[in-house]
Length: 256
Length: 240
Image 1 (cartoon, each protein chain N blue to C red):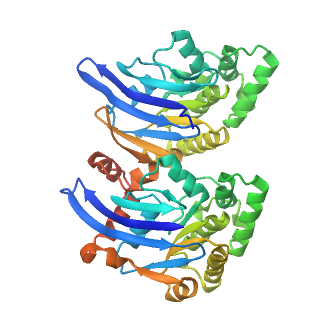
Image 2 (spheres, chains in turn red, green; image 1 turned 30 degrees about the horizontal axis):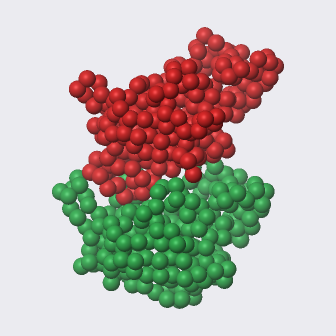
Image 3 (tube, rainbow over the protein chains, first blue to last red; image 1 turned 135 degrees about the vertical axis):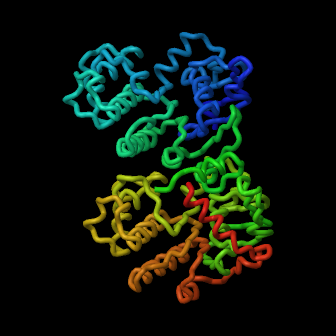
């Protein structure tokens, strides 16, 4: 089986400071990988390097494209990369307002991504948008409302609908449940879990919440000071952590 | 079906003075299809640890753990997930579920995961829940609010939904009343009859004598019979 994403020796420095260093892994179709670590561990830098938001200083990010097979997205042209991020890739930001257009209606936010890949028929775009609002549990009556009138949890669900409407194969998520109430978080996780499985998505989820990765991720990578210190099956890394830092991380979680 | 050779396990507690605790040393055992083997030994001997290692939940320091011919010690996460989905079932002592998912779907999920259609999976789930005396009015509710005994029975129903060729059972009859205990024992006997290789921990001696073909005393693999090993396992479980 060809990996969907093959990351090789990714390094990103900010001057003398290391963002992330020598990160390599293969992600296979349908796999969900979590990346955990404290703030400053390099997990968001790594995610942004993989998603094409940051240019790594070294290394390659090879994606198995639909049309042309495995291609290094670091060296491909900007228009090609932009096309990927509108079709086969999706990026869910921690703050929904970074991933939404706040001045455009909810339906428009979902429809815009469809139009970006060539959809032109207004009726079809609108019905697809309404269908997706329903799938993320937003009432169809809100389709013409702007996201500014939505709660935080609704904005996050709208962002997910906007991202998934084009049927991507790989979703990058940066702290998707950060800043939400726990009850809203549970609902969102439940939704994400269902979507990931039904659509057979591969996903890379950056978070500092171990409960989130236990629920969503098949495998886990632990980062500290820009380096990967441990990786493996999620429940194995959490229940039998091998590295000193992972042991500290796991034992630091408060019990409810 | 399940084959362990020269497996050993140590826990290194980096944040507690790098204490190294040897839990199991040089474990070799084989369980064939249609056979049920009981793990015995005092509390702390490493029974649950061994079971978790066979499930790939704890990492082995050395040796090989083969289930259906695949060595889990050397496998990638996706390969272990595939083995767990298709070959190796595990009934743990505690039910761990996703919030908000109805009991019926919790039980049907292992079947859905191997590609069984929704109706067929739900029909099988209903049979098992009825057999284990879970009242029908509870089926549409999440098991998170159920009593301990009900949760355990949901866990067992889930564990027996898919006919796994290999199964691990951690105290499946603990805290069950006589009627439900009888149901669980007959489920185990049915699984054996269809050729499942089973490893179980049973503190219930009568149950053990009835369903198990032989016993393996885990304390003979325990270096110096360290009594702290059980506590370490629980520490990890609750911390996560």
